[in-house]
Amino acid sequence: MEKKLMSPVVKGLIIAAAVIAFAVVTAIMGVEKSKNFGWVQYVLIIGGIVWACINYGNQMEGNVTFGNVFAHGFKVTAVLTCIFILYMVLALTVLFPEIKEQSLAIMRAEMAKQPNKGDTEQMEKIVAGVSKYFVVITAGSTMIVFLIMGCVASLAGAVVAKKNPNANPLG
Image (cartoon, rainbow, N blue to C red; front, side):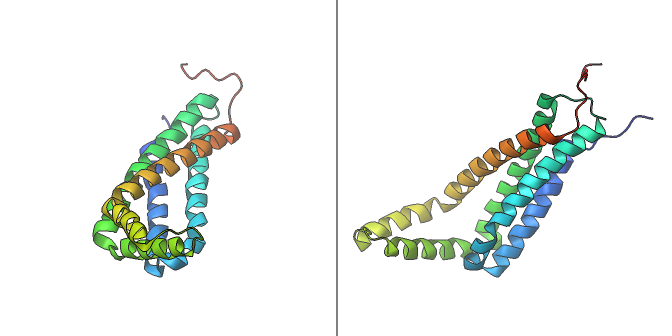
């Protein structure tokens, strides 16, 4: 009987579920409080992708190459990124729309603290521009950060995954 492999889609969905659950908890806590726990989300993502790579190497009994494992990890990253961005757009527009206003208020306060803050009119123009494209800016920056982290985690996972030095992935 042939072993059933867990696909990158399933692994990506599992990691996305964990990251989304954490994001919901921090959103309920509030933006100001969740800033202190933001790094935990990154640990979940990187740890999950490394786990996916190691799991893939084990499922293939080490008959993999560095490139095979990296590709598997990056596929997991792609699924995770897509699912999280869908959640994030839904959260910012429907579930937790107050996050946008809280974030803009924090942005105003941080801009006011700057020594060369300029005039208030210019500051409000900047905040209005960010407000108009808040979801797009947030989704784009999240995608870039997740893909970079996923690339690094896939590289790390490919390094630590069990590999047979005489692996023949075609045979």
